Image (tube, rainbow, N blue to C red; front, side, top):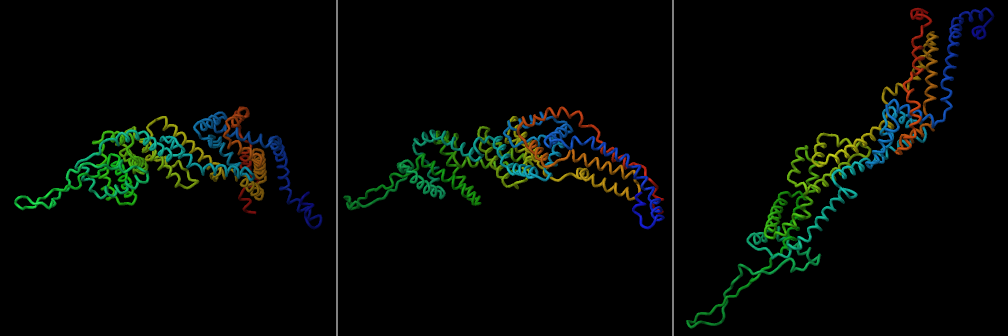
Length: 526
């Protein structure tokens, strides 16, 4: 009838056109019955899904993906609770979820609407703060108790200074040390410069000059012969001896301590200026003075043992920083070998500060956990963190940070090639159906078209609209264990059916393997 009604000309032309179209009409008619049955099957199967509440649809997608990942809501909730107990409230359900659940999150993140922005902004902001979080884990592992490593460092220094002060006060009461060593030391240029600086410090702190210096008998006074104006019986002038410099000013113990501290400052200044040769020379003088004072004034030695000085503390801190920059773990071990165990707190804090600086210098969105994955860094951490429990807690925190990085990439990164092919299957099926129809393979075209229609409705029924994407995003970004556990009942209902065979592949396969209406040779000959 189509050829008869649509042809031009008279009855003969219309009859001839209808006759030529008869095979095609017969084929389409034969395909109409199974196609009609197929459409009925499609709508009978998916109409309940198409009318489902978007929130319920999102929850079902999530629990099905959890079942495919062989995870339960309870397991994910427990992982989130463990993270919160370790101080990682940024850890979310998606971080503990498996690959299939993260794939559902990626679908939500790619769906136009509020969810796309919310997910990407939340994950980006979290990654921006990763350096600060890892820095705090390092501080905890290495013993920093304050708001940061620097505050802890200053707290340790001040506490030691306070504890040692009574010992210094006792040492300052000892008589001023004297002898050839001190006479020779006073003649050195660096010590003369330090004396002038110490006098300025004493004046600024209103320290009496008598606390810094004292007068003692001069062992080598100056003796001068002068005329008296008298003569002896022989007429010779009578001379008398005048003694000058009978006493000399020498530093007290406190004075020597102030001089030593000025030498400390000079050593640090020269090192910072890059003048290593001069720094080593002054350092040698400083170390000799410190050792001699400790021997001659035992209380001073005790005070140094309790709290050496600011310079020694800075050197200990620098040892820790150098350890992090060491070429390998063996070099790091060597740098700590000579430090007593009870004195290793400052090197550990120095190491924490150096790690913090390195984290700050990395790009904002960079994965900060990578620098801890090398054997070199692992060996250095073995030197610094000798408590197995502390090290285990640190490693667990880093592992969760790695989970967060992977989840962020899974949700906001690009799809894999396989996933892109799956998402593009509908286009391929539709094109194949059209090609089969144009080439005369009616049954194959009907099968492909049916499979394409079924696949389209399946994606519509199980896919995402704006509301579903928003709900899925909220579920996966939740850090509320109870909200995650609320999916338990639905999970139990569907977990026995997640591996049920899909109808779409069967229909597509049937279409691809349907017999053709003719052979290729006949078609090429036409």
